[in-house]
Amino acid sequence: MNTAKDEVRELLDKLPENCSLKDVQYHLYVIEKIKHGLQVAEEQGTLTQEEAEARLKKKAHRVVWLNLTTWRPGAPVKTDEKVVSESLTR
Image 1 (cartoon, rainbow, N blue to C red):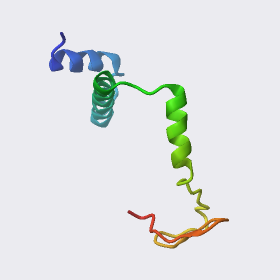
Image 2 (tube, rainbow, N blue to C red; image 1 turned 180 degrees about the vertical axis):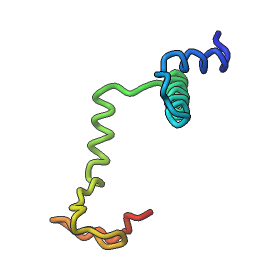
Image 3 (cartoon, helix red, strand yellow; image 1 turned 180 degrees about the horizontal axis):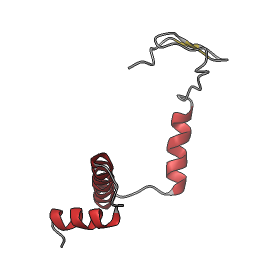
Image 4 (tube, rainbow, N blue to C red; image 1 turned 45 degrees about the vertical axis):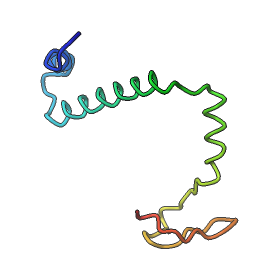
């Protein structure tokens, strides 16, 4: 099993010589998120394609497309069906 230092060394070997500290931090962040996701998937299981699509369909009605050239923060969002008055600046 690799230690944290071994993993960082391996990452540094893969990155270009001119990478910034932000680049290193970003890649470490991504690696940690992937490891966490794999651990959660192992513990809790995963969804089938059909289950994932069904969940997305249930939430699809919540999606509101904005015309960002005319919308301003805090203003209600006008759609064809209704006006969503909840502020989207949260």
